[in-house]
Length: 414
Image (cartoon, rainbow, N blue to C red; front, side, top):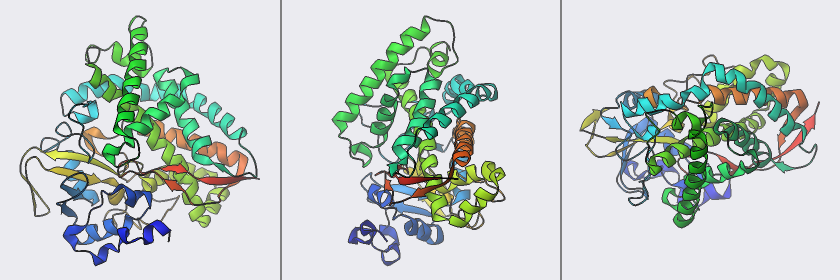
């Protein structure tokens, strides 16, 4: 048990009054100490009201089927009213994006950019991803400790982002920076001062506005900026809506894949029998990928706001109240997933998970994420007998993005 988990701040949740449980504390996620909190809530109070938290009062929905009920009912549980995360948007710096919209506007804007992950475009991207993954892996040091997050997970996903935006490739790490400051600011319990976040996001808007002005004067392209610039439904977005959609696409394309690439390495080291199973049968990779995504759950939650009074599991949710769907808890729900706390790379129904959400807001890039992970692991297994974790991971301080800052590893060849 780590030192952070043993501090009084993280008391055994079974010793606390049920109504005092608050799973929104970002330090719980930094310390990986949240699991027993969700276990108790699933078992004793799956629709749980927290009256007092750093982000105000909120409802926690912790079981798989209850989250599906909320996800399917967008008329009662709105994304547009209040946003998609437990923290409130700053009144004087509000962005918008299609994930923060309800139909019909949501459907129109989402459709504008889905072409980038259409099967025909994925087929074009596959050899590019494989070539880049191979180059990244071939340049890694053998037998020396290095940070897997920095050298592999971030680098591969940022290269992919630069491609789908047609962003200047040599400046691609700016995309990583903008993604990080958008999700780790003081507003949401992270370390980035609000002034730095604003400055960075306005810089992002300025750079992408320049790219927009270039693309709109060219013929329609196959990148995300061109798709938005040339579609009548999105070409007249106001600046903050454009910024909101950019951050959504950057974070969606960065954090989820990047943290699953790291998580897979960590989970196989935690479960050496599964790693051996993989070494003996590389045909298991396609099944292993969705299991990694389930087990990692790169986005811990999504939030909705009740537009009217509603009764869920006998609990009376009132109009205007914040409703948080904890995907990280749903993916460990034993009533829906067999042996959910185990990492099993040949699981029978590996895609039965909540990591991509459900319903109209289901992650549009899920197939791209799975393809990237599949290619990465095919290329890893060609080169290395083992990616050995040689120290504890450093986790992100956030109750929204569930990820890693560092994972020290050493490579062992066949």
